[in-house]
View (cartoon, one colour):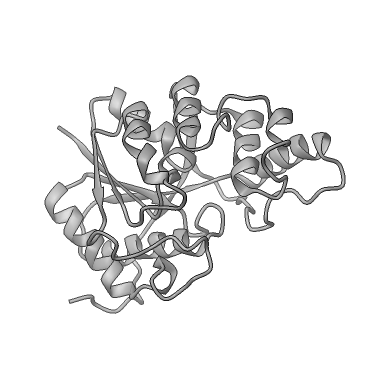
Length: 245
């Protein structure tokens, strides 16, 4: 059976970044395994198993040791992924790959999808690990045109307000698409973490979430461009990364 290893910083990244792709791979007969580096914030870990079930992920476990890294809300504190030793992070990914023997690794792209420092660290960790892990790796990105479309949806509902953090830029380079997933199941997986963020009308959500929320912006991007696909850049081994051995 073909195996895909999904590597993410936080619970909920598997919905926003790779939720369509894992669903499609599962339908194609792949065994999909998730390794997550932190427990997230505000009890996010409680919903991870349900999300995985909805998105075709057969099992999840920790990347590295339990509580080795924490999610501090992007503040890049001393125990965050952003401040982790790049060698330690790459080695944890290598260990997971040695056990799982994936044909494919999915993670976030070089911009971290949203610019979150933990996401960027994970993407760089995968690139470093590729020096010794022999498989293909794809990093999730969004297109710049899709970010603009999502921003316009929110601006129509919240004129004059800042939309997103400003870190979700998207890219203009060609991306590989994996599509054909269930919109309903991805919406349900997002609802596992945030009440109604997947299913309630966008106008109603603006009464609960700030227009500057990147989660709300990605929801608007999905509404504008579709929930059924993810887009990826090819990740390559980081030739400048020092050996973690």
